[in-house]
Image (cartoon, rainbow, N blue to C red; front, top):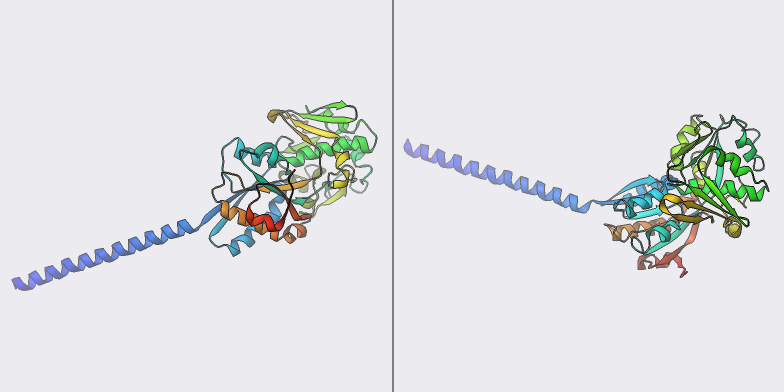
Length: 351
């Protein structure tokens, strides 16, 4: 009897030990699997202009399909705000894509970036809906007179945060030159904000204060242009200065503005540059120029290899931009210390 009890005890001890080993082995396997999964899944962070949201959503899906170990996470915002996240707030991104390529050399180089590509174009239009007042009257010649009417409300994004915002100011100021009417910008903007303008021998400098004040009975202003789409579509105001690509993507009606003022054409660069805008809070002066989008991988990007692969992927698929009403620059123009992986896809300019 004693021998049987001893045998049973031994079996119980061995069984318990074996179970413990098995559970320990399972736990180790699970930990190992979780560890492997964590190591393999790379989060690729992209700060990009709001006007790139639609095409970049497509690029995200396409890229993740070909790179299952990468999780692309996008943060759309005004391009100036995107850059400031990196330069002022110390945030890290793997890719920065701006609606104004010049923000990269002006605000990021050489400390936060040492190269960039110019990969897409755009132009400013005046969008509206079926609810907009005088929609059956407005055209490319009388649009500013429609906006001046006291019962008409229009919007643009904040020039402090967003290139579309300061480009909208440039367009309205250029309109004074094109239509030979020196009251247009005064009646549309100066009368309803604390923005100022300095004129000097046929050139204009728009001065935008950091604490922008607007008369909300006439103007609707948000940080980035895409923030204004929902209220426009809901009928909260009548007209919106926005990129042509975004208007197309959201199936909005729009007035095409003359080439001499819409910032969409290289051949009018010398006309555009008669207007500049100063962001007083940053002490940055921006000269009006044709709208060109820029992209870079910041020098402190956590995942440079994958980021360069994403940029390459965008350059290899210009049809995504084209299908979303955003003309691609092909081949893209690159400047700076361009990565070897991109050199076969770009035209490198030295100045």
